[in-house]
Image 1 (spheres, rainbow, N blue to C red):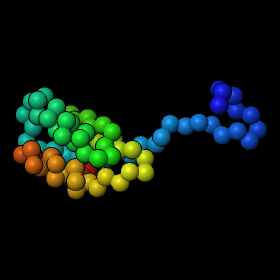
Image 2 (image 1 turned 180 degrees about the horizontal axis):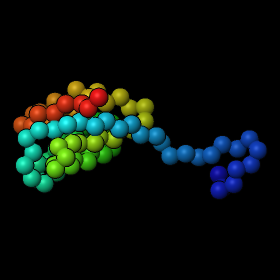
Image 3 (image 1 turned 90 degrees about the vertical axis):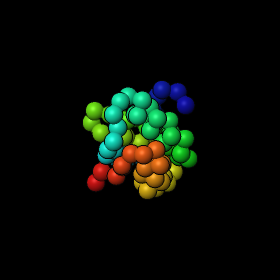
Length: 88
């Protein structure tokens, strides 16, 4: 479709994404955050992981329509030696 929207035309939209925020304890440096991001981004359905070591937070973005259980993310982070929990 071109950039026009005429009567009855639907706008093309980018896929929506879902975001989950996790608190993570035990990180000490930027390498900790990179390690978490690498492991979490390898999980099926995850498109992006952004860890802020100073804030003790990891933001996980998933594809629309893809179910990524928070427990799977927590388990992946915990297996690395960090404590993680989903923020409400």
